[in-house]
Image (cartoon, rainbow, N blue to C red; front, side, top):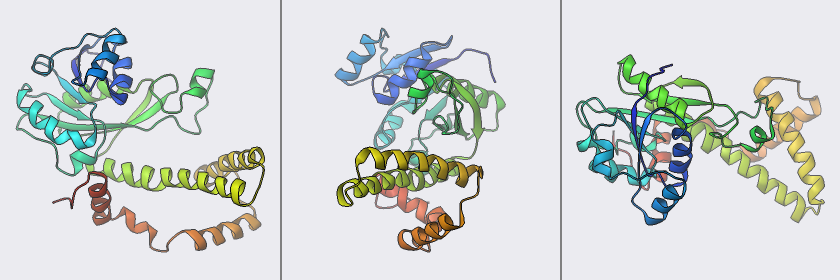
Length: 285
């Protein structure tokens, strides 16, 4: 892990993710320049006590530019910014979709990187009320992060890791993958599967309360507790499921899950998923 300080430009510094990133960067020894073009975002940035910098001035000598802007804006924003960046600088996006889809403007000598937070684990041993309250990460609860970089230069990877550890702090580990692998993790593994299951759990809860007439407090209590047991047993093997539970699980799989569901991990399905997310007809390869 690098202990050097770098010049970092944050684009979209007054947005939702930009504010999270900036709130952490302001605590570091890095030279940070904050860029925001919306009046509301500018006001939020100033209200936080941070000085705004014009785009050209912010990126010209930046070692790394953090693009805290929506995926759909990354194409036009990178087309404006990348030509301004110095040789050897790094473009860091916070989600792999646009990078994997080839929507970013590239330039010889400019390095592309992506990083995404893992969010605090459900198995994290939390010590304080602030850690318990921080379910997203980047405030008090430690988390891991995933990073990818299109460079073999360890010095460039060190800049990315230092930036990732700063913007998502407190960080335990940074795991390195390829941009494609990061896209396979996010969205396929964690949004297409895990977030969908989280939403399905809420739908099932509503059915229990509003269709079956179970008191809501009772339904929430048993669902929250059993969700913890299900995840602990299913992901860590803490305790074996009972024989009766295994039969009920088989019924649930037969009733809810399509037999060919694992096709979502195929490259063509990933392309279709990301094309939908990015509002594209298709992703060209």
